[in-house]
Image 1 (tube, helix red, strand yellow):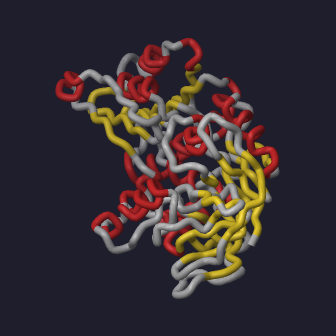
Image 2: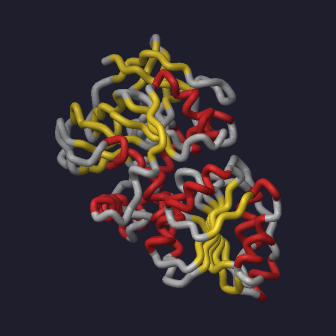
Length: 367
Protein backbone atom coordinates (compact mmCIF):
# COMPACT_ATOMS: atom_id res chain seq x y z
CA UNK A 1 0.00 0.00 0.00
CA UNK A 2 0.99 3.64 -0.38
CA UNK A 3 1.58 6.02 2.52
CA UNK A 4 2.52 9.65 2.84
CA UNK A 5 5.68 9.96 4.90
CA UNK A 6 8.53 12.28 5.88
CA UNK A 7 11.80 10.60 4.94
CA UNK A 8 15.21 11.67 6.23
CA UNK A 9 17.79 10.74 3.63
CA UNK A 10 20.83 12.38 5.21
CA UNK A 11 21.61 14.06 8.50
CA UNK A 12 21.66 17.84 8.20
CA UNK A 13 19.06 17.87 5.45
CA UNK A 14 15.31 18.63 5.67
CA UNK A 15 12.73 15.89 5.76
CA UNK A 16 11.40 14.99 2.32
CA UNK A 17 7.62 14.47 2.29
CA UNK A 18 6.74 11.83 -0.30
CA UNK A 19 4.84 8.63 -0.97
CA UNK A 20 6.39 5.37 0.20
CA UNK A 21 5.39 1.75 -0.19
CA UNK A 22 4.37 -0.15 2.95
CA UNK A 23 4.24 -3.95 3.02
CA UNK A 24 1.53 -5.88 4.82
CA UNK A 25 2.27 -6.93 8.41
CA UNK A 26 4.07 -10.22 8.90
CA UNK A 27 3.58 -12.59 11.83
CA UNK A 28 3.56 -10.71 15.14
CA UNK A 29 3.18 -7.30 13.46
CA UNK A 30 0.48 -4.68 13.27
CA UNK A 31 -0.43 -2.18 10.54
CA UNK A 32 -1.32 1.10 12.24
CA UNK A 33 -2.84 4.15 10.62
CA UNK A 34 -1.05 6.92 12.51
CA UNK A 35 -3.43 9.78 13.28
CA UNK A 36 -1.08 11.97 15.33
CA UNK A 37 2.71 11.95 15.71
CA UNK A 38 4.60 13.99 18.29
CA UNK A 39 7.33 16.42 17.27
CA UNK A 40 10.08 15.35 19.69
CA UNK A 41 13.64 16.63 20.08
CA UNK A 42 15.09 13.12 19.78
CA UNK A 43 14.04 12.98 16.12
CA UNK A 44 15.57 16.42 15.63
CA UNK A 45 18.84 15.11 17.09
CA UNK A 46 18.90 12.44 14.37
CA UNK A 47 17.98 15.02 11.73
CA UNK A 48 20.81 17.32 12.85
CA UNK A 49 23.38 14.52 13.09
CA UNK A 50 23.81 14.66 16.87
CA UNK A 51 22.31 11.20 17.30
CA UNK A 52 23.15 8.28 15.03
CA UNK A 53 20.50 6.24 13.22
CA UNK A 54 20.49 4.09 10.07
CA UNK A 55 19.39 6.22 7.08
CA UNK A 56 17.41 6.78 4.95
CA UNK A 57 14.66 6.36 7.49
CA UNK A 58 11.18 7.40 8.48
CA UNK A 59 11.60 8.93 11.92
CA UNK A 60 8.95 9.62 14.56
CA UNK A 61 8.73 7.59 17.75
CA UNK A 62 5.81 9.31 19.50
CA UNK A 63 2.46 8.48 17.96
CA UNK A 64 -1.07 7.17 18.27
CA UNK A 65 -3.45 5.74 15.72
CA UNK A 66 -5.86 3.00 14.69
CA UNK A 67 -5.06 -0.64 13.98
CA UNK A 68 -6.00 -1.47 10.38
CA UNK A 69 -4.56 -4.97 9.93
CA UNK A 70 -2.82 -7.57 12.07
CA UNK A 71 -0.35 -10.28 11.15
CA UNK A 72 -0.50 -13.95 12.01
CA UNK A 73 -0.47 -14.72 15.72
CA UNK A 74 -1.39 -11.23 16.94
CA UNK A 75 -3.83 -11.50 19.84
CA UNK A 76 -3.61 -8.32 21.95
CA UNK A 77 -5.10 -5.93 19.37
CA UNK A 78 -7.48 -6.15 16.44
CA UNK A 79 -8.52 -3.89 13.55
CA UNK A 80 -10.32 -0.80 14.81
CA UNK A 81 -8.48 -0.62 18.13
CA UNK A 82 -6.96 2.71 19.11
CA UNK A 83 -3.32 2.34 20.17
CA UNK A 84 -0.28 4.24 21.42
CA UNK A 85 3.08 3.31 19.93
CA UNK A 86 5.74 2.28 22.45
CA UNK A 87 9.18 3.22 21.17
CA UNK A 88 11.10 0.68 23.26
CA UNK A 89 10.11 -2.79 22.14
CA UNK A 90 10.39 -5.40 24.90
CA UNK A 91 10.43 -9.18 24.76
CA UNK A 92 8.48 -9.75 27.98
CA UNK A 93 10.74 -12.59 29.16
CA UNK A 94 14.22 -11.24 29.98
CA UNK A 95 15.52 -10.17 33.41
CA UNK A 96 14.68 -6.52 32.73
CA UNK A 97 11.15 -7.23 31.59
CA UNK A 98 10.65 -9.46 34.63
CA UNK A 99 11.86 -6.59 36.83
CA UNK A 100 9.33 -4.15 35.25
CA UNK A 101 12.15 -2.32 33.42
CA UNK A 102 11.17 -3.12 29.80
CA UNK A 103 12.95 -0.07 28.36
CA UNK A 104 16.25 -1.82 29.11
CA UNK A 105 15.28 -4.94 27.15
CA UNK A 106 17.74 -5.91 24.41
CA UNK A 107 14.91 -6.23 21.87
CA UNK A 108 14.38 -2.47 21.90
CA UNK A 109 18.10 -1.80 21.57
CA UNK A 110 18.44 -4.13 18.59
CA UNK A 111 15.50 -2.74 16.62
CA UNK A 112 16.67 0.83 17.29
CA UNK A 113 20.23 0.09 16.14
CA UNK A 114 19.33 -1.84 12.98
CA UNK A 115 16.51 0.29 11.62
CA UNK A 116 14.76 -2.95 10.71
CA UNK A 117 12.08 -5.09 12.30
CA UNK A 118 12.69 -8.32 14.18
CA UNK A 119 13.18 -10.49 11.09
CA UNK A 120 15.99 -8.19 9.92
CA UNK A 121 14.04 -6.53 7.09
CA UNK A 122 12.15 -3.28 6.55
CA UNK A 123 8.51 -2.86 5.55
CA UNK A 124 9.18 0.52 3.89
CA UNK A 125 10.56 1.24 0.42
CA UNK A 126 10.49 3.94 -2.22
CA UNK A 127 11.12 3.23 -5.89
CA UNK A 128 12.57 -0.13 -4.88
CA UNK A 129 14.99 1.36 -2.32
CA UNK A 130 14.78 0.24 1.28
CA UNK A 131 13.71 2.87 3.81
CA UNK A 132 14.62 2.13 7.43
CA UNK A 133 12.33 2.17 10.48
CA UNK A 134 13.07 4.26 13.57
CA UNK A 135 12.72 2.84 17.09
CA UNK A 136 10.28 0.29 15.66
CA UNK A 137 7.62 3.02 15.29
CA UNK A 138 8.20 5.45 12.37
CA UNK A 139 5.20 7.61 13.18
CA UNK A 140 6.13 10.12 10.48
CA UNK A 141 4.36 7.81 8.06
CA UNK A 142 0.57 7.83 7.84
CA UNK A 143 0.67 4.02 7.77
CA UNK A 144 3.36 2.08 9.59
CA UNK A 145 4.18 -1.46 10.67
CA UNK A 146 4.87 -1.93 14.38
CA UNK A 147 5.65 -5.12 16.33
CA UNK A 148 2.74 -6.27 18.47
CA UNK A 149 4.89 -5.82 21.58
CA UNK A 150 5.23 -2.11 20.82
CA UNK A 151 1.56 -1.12 20.64
CA UNK A 152 -0.75 -0.50 23.58
CA UNK A 153 -4.53 -0.49 23.26
CA UNK A 154 -6.19 2.61 24.73
CA UNK A 155 -9.80 3.79 25.20
CA UNK A 156 -11.41 5.09 22.02
CA UNK A 157 -12.67 8.27 23.67
CA UNK A 158 -9.15 9.56 24.38
CA UNK A 159 -8.20 12.11 21.67
CA UNK A 160 -5.38 10.60 19.64
CA UNK A 161 -3.43 13.86 19.40
CA UNK A 162 -3.23 13.85 23.21
CA UNK A 163 -2.67 10.11 23.46
CA UNK A 164 0.38 10.44 21.21
CA UNK A 165 2.10 12.66 23.78
CA UNK A 166 1.77 9.98 26.44
CA UNK A 167 3.98 7.67 24.40
CA UNK A 168 7.11 9.71 25.04
CA UNK A 169 6.99 13.21 26.55
CA UNK A 170 4.58 12.48 29.38
CA UNK A 171 5.73 9.05 30.46
CA UNK A 172 9.41 10.04 30.15
CA UNK A 173 9.06 13.17 32.28
CA UNK A 174 6.54 12.05 34.87
CA UNK A 175 8.11 8.60 35.04
CA UNK A 176 11.57 9.98 35.77
CA UNK A 177 10.12 11.64 38.87
CA UNK A 178 7.84 8.86 40.05
CA UNK A 179 9.66 5.69 39.00
CA UNK A 180 13.35 6.59 38.88
CA UNK A 181 13.97 9.39 41.37
CA UNK A 182 10.96 8.66 43.58
CA UNK A 183 10.74 12.30 44.57
CA UNK A 184 9.10 12.74 47.94
CA UNK A 185 6.99 15.51 49.51
CA UNK A 186 8.77 18.74 50.50
CA UNK A 187 11.73 18.01 48.19
CA UNK A 188 13.62 20.77 46.37
CA UNK A 189 13.79 20.08 42.63
CA UNK A 190 15.47 21.74 39.64
CA UNK A 191 14.57 20.91 36.03
CA UNK A 192 17.01 21.90 33.29
CA UNK A 193 15.12 22.28 30.01
CA UNK A 194 11.42 23.20 30.07
CA UNK A 195 10.40 21.73 26.73
CA UNK A 196 7.95 18.89 26.17
CA UNK A 197 9.75 16.42 28.45
CA UNK A 198 10.92 19.01 30.97
CA UNK A 199 7.46 20.37 31.78
CA UNK A 200 6.36 16.80 32.44
CA UNK A 201 9.20 16.45 34.91
CA UNK A 202 7.85 19.68 36.45
CA UNK A 203 4.29 18.41 36.70
CA UNK A 204 5.52 15.05 37.97
CA UNK A 205 7.38 16.85 40.77
CA UNK A 206 4.27 18.91 41.52
CA UNK A 207 2.15 15.76 41.78
CA UNK A 208 4.79 14.27 44.09
CA UNK A 209 4.40 17.22 46.46
CA UNK A 210 7.80 18.88 45.94
CA UNK A 211 8.11 22.09 47.96
CA UNK A 212 10.22 24.00 45.44
CA UNK A 213 10.37 23.30 41.69
CA UNK A 214 12.86 25.44 39.78
CA UNK A 215 12.55 25.42 35.98
CA UNK A 216 15.61 26.42 33.95
CA UNK A 217 15.44 27.34 30.26
CA UNK A 218 16.82 29.89 27.82
CA UNK A 219 13.37 30.77 26.47
CA UNK A 220 11.08 32.96 28.56
CA UNK A 221 8.03 31.52 26.81
CA UNK A 222 8.90 28.06 28.08
CA UNK A 223 9.52 29.35 31.59
CA UNK A 224 6.06 30.93 31.53
CA UNK A 225 4.60 27.60 30.45
CA UNK A 226 6.56 25.76 33.15
CA UNK A 227 4.73 27.83 35.76
CA UNK A 228 1.43 26.50 34.40
CA UNK A 229 2.70 22.97 35.02
CA UNK A 230 3.73 23.62 38.62
CA UNK A 231 7.11 25.40 38.64
CA UNK A 232 7.40 27.57 41.75
CA UNK A 233 10.48 29.43 40.51
CA UNK A 234 12.09 30.02 37.13
CA UNK A 235 15.72 30.71 36.17
CA UNK A 236 16.77 32.01 32.77
CA UNK A 237 19.68 30.09 31.28
CA UNK A 238 20.45 33.01 28.98
CA UNK A 239 22.65 34.67 31.62
CA UNK A 240 24.78 31.59 32.23
CA UNK A 241 24.71 31.77 36.05
CA UNK A 242 22.11 29.09 36.57
CA UNK A 243 23.86 27.20 39.37
CA UNK A 244 24.43 30.37 41.38
CA UNK A 245 20.77 31.33 40.89
CA UNK A 246 19.57 27.92 42.11
CA UNK A 247 21.80 28.08 45.17
CA UNK A 248 20.55 31.59 45.92
CA UNK A 249 16.93 30.41 45.72
CA UNK A 250 17.67 27.53 48.09
CA UNK A 251 19.63 29.62 50.62
CA UNK A 252 22.93 28.14 49.42
CA UNK A 253 21.82 24.59 50.14
CA UNK A 254 21.14 23.30 46.64
CA UNK A 255 18.39 20.94 45.50
CA UNK A 256 17.60 17.35 46.37
CA UNK A 257 16.92 16.36 42.77
CA UNK A 258 18.15 17.95 39.56
CA UNK A 259 16.80 16.61 36.27
CA UNK A 260 18.49 17.30 32.94
CA UNK A 261 15.77 17.21 30.30
CA UNK A 262 17.85 19.19 27.79
CA UNK A 263 20.23 16.36 26.94
CA UNK A 264 23.36 18.51 26.89
CA UNK A 265 26.72 18.03 28.58
CA UNK A 266 26.64 21.49 30.11
CA UNK A 267 23.15 21.16 31.55
CA UNK A 268 23.89 17.78 33.11
CA UNK A 269 27.03 19.22 34.68
CA UNK A 270 25.04 22.16 35.98
CA UNK A 271 22.43 19.78 37.38
CA UNK A 272 25.16 18.01 39.34
CA UNK A 273 26.67 21.29 40.54
CA UNK A 274 23.30 22.51 41.82
CA UNK A 275 22.83 19.54 44.20
CA UNK A 276 22.62 19.60 47.97
CA UNK A 277 24.33 16.93 50.05
CA UNK A 278 22.86 13.49 49.21
CA UNK A 279 21.32 15.04 46.09
CA UNK A 280 20.65 13.13 42.87
CA UNK A 281 21.31 14.42 39.35
CA UNK A 282 19.29 12.53 36.77
CA UNK A 283 19.88 12.51 33.01
CA UNK A 284 16.53 12.31 31.22
CA UNK A 285 17.17 13.97 27.84
CA UNK A 286 18.95 11.99 25.11
CA UNK A 287 22.52 13.28 24.74
CA UNK A 288 24.50 13.64 21.48
CA UNK A 289 26.77 10.81 20.35
CA UNK A 290 29.88 10.37 22.52
CA UNK A 291 28.85 13.09 24.99
CA UNK A 292 30.93 13.11 28.17
CA UNK A 293 30.63 15.13 31.35
CA UNK A 294 33.15 16.41 33.89
CA UNK A 295 32.09 16.49 37.53
CA UNK A 296 33.75 16.86 40.92
CA UNK A 297 34.62 13.37 42.11
CA UNK A 298 35.25 14.69 45.63
CA UNK A 299 31.60 15.74 45.99
CA UNK A 300 30.55 12.18 45.24
CA UNK A 301 32.22 11.13 48.48
CA UNK A 302 32.20 14.18 50.75
CA UNK A 303 28.64 15.20 49.91
CA UNK A 304 27.34 11.77 48.88
CA UNK A 305 25.90 13.08 45.63
CA UNK A 306 24.78 10.72 42.87
CA UNK A 307 24.50 10.85 39.09
CA UNK A 308 22.17 8.49 37.27
CA UNK A 309 19.86 8.28 34.28
CA UNK A 310 16.31 7.38 33.38
CA UNK A 311 15.32 5.87 30.03
CA UNK A 312 11.67 6.17 29.01
CA UNK A 313 10.77 7.29 32.52
CA UNK A 314 12.09 3.97 33.90
CA UNK A 315 8.51 2.95 33.21
CA UNK A 316 6.51 -0.16 32.51
CA UNK A 317 4.26 1.45 29.86
CA UNK A 318 1.51 -1.19 29.99
CA UNK A 319 1.16 -0.49 33.70
CA UNK A 320 1.92 3.23 33.75
CA UNK A 321 0.11 4.65 30.70
CA UNK A 322 -3.36 3.49 31.89
CA UNK A 323 -2.56 5.19 35.22
CA UNK A 324 -1.60 8.39 33.38
CA UNK A 325 -4.86 8.27 31.43
CA UNK A 326 -6.75 8.06 34.73
CA UNK A 327 -4.77 11.00 36.12
CA UNK A 328 -5.71 13.03 33.05
CA UNK A 329 -9.37 12.16 33.39
CA UNK A 330 -9.28 13.12 37.07
CA UNK A 331 -7.81 16.52 36.18
CA UNK A 332 -4.45 15.84 37.84
CA UNK A 333 -2.37 15.50 34.65
CA UNK A 334 -2.17 18.34 32.14
CA UNK A 335 -2.34 17.20 28.52
CA UNK A 336 -4.42 19.83 26.74
CA UNK A 337 -2.01 22.53 27.94
CA UNK A 338 0.95 20.51 26.64
CA UNK A 339 -0.26 20.48 23.03
CA UNK A 340 0.51 23.91 21.62
CA UNK A 341 0.20 23.43 17.85
CA UNK A 342 -0.92 20.95 15.18
CA UNK A 343 0.80 20.69 11.78
CA UNK A 344 0.06 18.74 8.60
CA UNK A 345 2.84 16.36 7.51
CA UNK A 346 3.71 18.76 4.67
CA UNK A 347 4.88 21.29 7.30
CA UNK A 348 7.06 18.96 9.35
CA UNK A 349 10.21 21.00 8.73
CA UNK A 350 8.41 24.14 9.90
CA UNK A 351 7.26 22.24 13.00
CA UNK A 352 10.85 21.45 13.94
CA UNK A 353 11.98 25.00 13.26
CA UNK A 354 9.27 26.24 15.65
CA UNK A 355 10.37 23.73 18.29
CA UNK A 356 14.00 24.79 18.06
CA UNK A 357 13.10 28.48 18.34
CA UNK A 358 11.05 27.86 21.48
CA UNK A 359 7.76 28.81 19.81
CA UNK A 360 6.09 25.50 20.67
CA UNK A 361 6.05 23.37 23.79
CA UNK A 362 4.84 20.16 22.16
CA UNK A 363 3.31 20.01 18.71
CA UNK A 364 2.00 17.09 16.70
CA UNK A 365 1.79 16.09 13.08
CA UNK A 366 -1.83 15.19 12.36
CA UNK A 367 -2.73 13.27 9.22
